[in-house]
Image: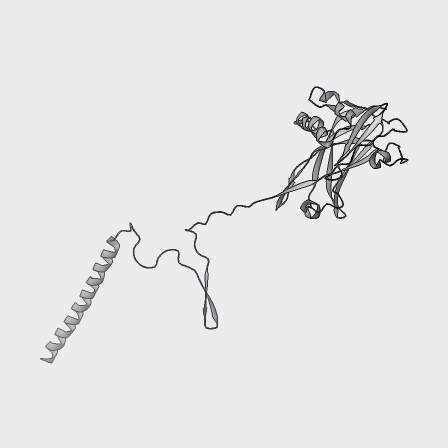
Length: 278
């Protein structure tokens, strides 16, 4: 992440804009002209060109990035907390002392994230994939200020993506961005920041095996023919535990009775034949 230190009227001001994992040293700036507080600022969110993450390569959905104007900027470039964020624990004065990124996170970002909880954002950037990269833009009338941006978590079939919230200063200048002596000090109202994704694999739990589930159909090869046979759902022989034996006893008695009738029939036929011969 990069942050920039703006000095105006002997007041050192740190300007934060996330552009990479690391951070650059703060630089001193003396603006050539006053800030136009009535101007429209255009804020762009994008994924870094060199980002090789799964999100940068394969995510095809959209990402909503909430913007909260936690401070306004006067014509000299000095920030003042917005009325709705007074007494919320946000220490905007930390920007006067060439702070490190950790100082900004602790004294501004963390309390600001808690303060905006449940609030409607002042603007929303919807970033989506265009021409192979993910980006989005929003225009805010009379928008000069310090913004807390919070990208909302998203997911796809394989990953969950989270992003680190931070702050961005609008407007800015070439001298602020580059720190090169002689660079253009004109305030620019088109600003941008980099969203850095963190992905977490989605683990899909397999359902436990059900031993009562029927087996898949078996394929039996017979000669040149393929015969599809369904596996039986129940045993083919023997009664199940708990089944009644009465039907089997009745069937056995009926069988014996039938055999007796057959034997009696042949006995009659044999007796009649003997009588005829006599």
